[in-house]
Amino acid sequence: MTTAQKETLGFQTEVKQMLHLMIHSLYSNKEIFLRELISNASDACDKLRFEALNNDGLFENDPNIKVRIEFDADAKTVTISDNGIGMSREEVVENLGTIAKSGTSQFLQQLSGDEKKDAHLIGQFGVGFYSSFIVADKVEVLTRRAGADSKEAILWTSAGEGEFIIEAAEKAGRGTQITLHLKDDEKEFADGFRLRNLVKKYSDHIAVPVEMLKEHYGEEDKPAEPEWEAVNSAKALWVRSKSDVKDEEYQEFYKHISHDFEDSLTWSHNKVEGTLEYTSLLYVPKRPPFDLWNREGNRGLKLYVQRVFIMDDAEQFLPPYLRFIKGVVDSNDLPLNVSREILQENGSIVSMRTALTKRILDMLKKLAKKDPEQYQTFWDGFGQVLKEGPADDFANKEKIAELFRFASTKGEDDKQSVSLDTYLERAQEGQDKIYYLTAENYLTASRSPHLEVFRKKGIEVLLLTDRVDEWMISHLSEFKGKTFEDITKGDLALDESDKAEQEKAEKENESLIERIKTTLGDKVEDVRISTRLTDSAACLVVGKDDMGMQMRRMLEAAGQALPEAKRVLEINTQHPLIVKMDQQSDEDRFKEMAEIIFEQSQLAEGSQLQDPAGYVDRINKLLLGLLDA
Image (cartoon, rainbow, N blue to C red; front, side):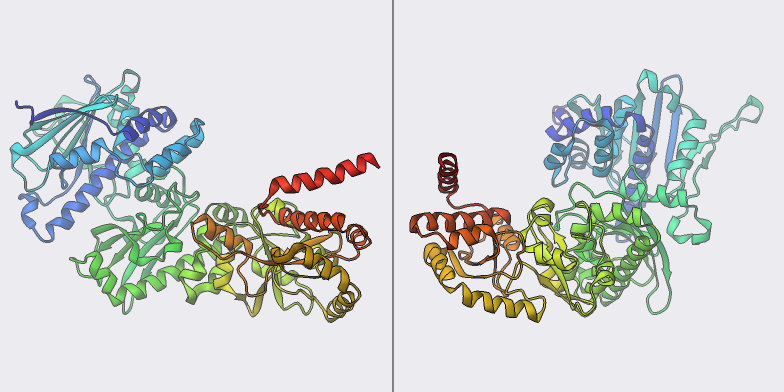
């Protein structure tokens, strides 16, 4: 055999890490190896069906696709084989030697060493074939791609310890055969009863028949030729009537298509008849995947046409803000030779996307009403992505907004649990605005001086601390006829008496205002008397139509060049510090106090000081003055 025919290759670094972590973290769920391998075999059969639409020669006179499981208790082996699409040499190296997923490095960095948490994360990532090494100390994969010569098969062998061997081989039938050489303490899996139970438990819903040899318990009834029988129902779950499908079956199907280890939060199974005919089965996961924030990553539904698998990750059926949804859509109207390009141009897809989006939003609304605790779990994991909705989907922005949850001044912690409907129910009589404040974190928001007058008047304010919030509000703008108002922007007057008092105070304090303006110069746009403050000395506000500070920080972090932000300094003339400052005749001392008040206002909102050392010097001078007094 030539060098080209047999090679020893090293696993990709990420695969080595994954194998080590998986073997240790997933041991308590070790039986899932069979689910993963059957799922892969089923996918290979689906891909054969799809490619054979344009080349029926790929069936090689064997059109009955199937997955088969065999075992040898004496040899301690379990073999899973399929007559699906198979793999070429290049595909073997790519699929079994590397992890071709974006974000793999970031994913591995998330692993903590906590076995329970890591098991969940690895399950989300999708372990697939590598789960074999949880129970096996050696794995052999014999595969031949459909349409290739029998002498073009490939044998892949590995002990899961950093390298693998691939060599040329022969295989009469197309497809893939995986043989697991079980570890000494895993021989329980080389048992017919155990394997049948696992197939029924995890893979009953697989549309491809999973076959095992009939077991005979007496020599007299043993047939001359081996007899195979299907162990699973072998009927696409979404084709069945909802009343015939148990919750456990729905959950196992979810795990099959998502490779998640946990149950989904909820699902929707629906058949549409009429102008368009299609069936959808949509799931909401319990926790976010590691690559949730990658809007360009693989997402979407599994697409079938008349029960024939067409493609994974058909993103055309869902808007980007619903990229976390898993599921299947099976159309009776699309052509069997449909491509991603055709999907982008097909008018039926737009109608289906609109209907599926509405169904998902209704499903989430129903979950929120029926089980607030479960909905809170959903919101904590996926809320920030859902907030992309008003920008992505103008037509449904109010439906999406009904699903939003926020922290507020009525709450006692940073839990985002207040809906906009709840906010409006609690609003004061005659209140025509939804008041909110954005900040870097909950503590900064909840202690903001801008809240003082609202607390005094008993008006609830939403505390927005997610990076996406200000951008989201700019697209939402109103909810059920009530406009959103940022309490850190513009000249605030909650009623006419506030405005009158402000005008009166500004006339009485003209000289103080001018002295502060002169001191701060172009650091501020203006100085005025505040109607916001009751306890603090001062705060900073931006113009009504200007960009908020949270949005500014987000854009600056993204590398965008922005003009310098000049804001208005509002002062509370009732505060003892402002009163003392007004009485200060020493102009140098006055300037120091004005600078300190300005810088403290910046710190209170979570901004960075341009000259932190200068601020420290000024504070130290004041402290020394107090100590010397």
